[in-house]
Image (cartoon, rainbow, N blue to C red; front, side, top):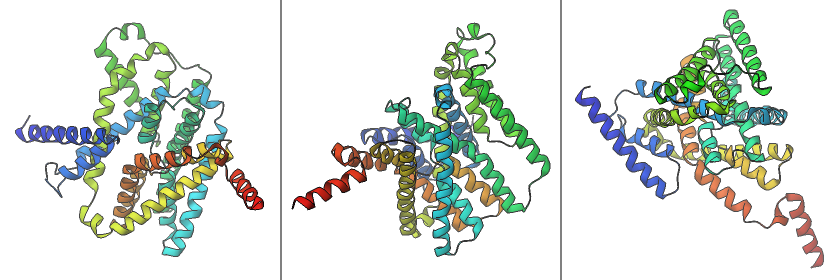
Length: 404
């Protein structure tokens, strides 16, 4: 190992540690420290990290491992009993996002391709942030937590048709061979999920021997995670979805729960690199020059997403308080939107200006998530119960005016 790599690792570890300790005192999530570290150590500031390609590739592994852990935590049989609500809610959300973007795009004179892309981008929330938040707050298995998890999972699955749509918009046609592969892969995924729901998945062999051997635990876990990720990627489906299926496979059997603990350090390590890569891609000069525009767009996205999701959750039977809270949870733009934007610029659907604006808005919306959720949560849950719905509020105001 060269001294340059050692120096970089030492500086990187120290920077992340100091930032994480500071943010912990501020009660902010650690991923903000990773993004800031990427900015500070990138070529535009100290130049400790010059090439971001390797970091980005390691970051992609972090997203894959994250979905693996999400799959292991989700109780799919329970979730499947109410799958219609998350599916319908997610589809309505995408449609409403498109309607909003179409109105804004008409005013801003955007092309229809940019309008569709941005409607996809804002409709995807961050599984990385919200699943960790729900787990830490103990809400992951609550009624609202399960419903929110269902919507997040549906969003992650929709990344596949979204990427196909972008490819079609760029090329004007879809390759028949690739389309057939994707359809077959999608059918296999559905069969896998059906088997998981009825608890008919194949049991992991040698699990008794593996449970006593830490080294083998790590490698069987990585094999399942990256193996299924590789298979789904070959079929033209998101690799992260394959990892999610591997997590479901692990989570179905209580005897294999030890895999979760064995792979936790890998998840932390690789996910940190994902957010580091986000910080490395930010153009600070561009950010300073267009700070007003980026701030306005970010605030608009948070408000629009919060409102859309609040009304959708209300339509799914949640109280107004819980609906607004769920809207706040899903208001940020997620990590898979980075994937869509990178695909879009590679295909030539957007230029560098649109790319940098979108990249900045996604990053800022993610960094503001904890603060935004805290503000919304304190606002709605401090209100008296009688103000929990607009109808009751209007009725009470009417009675007061009448008495006066």
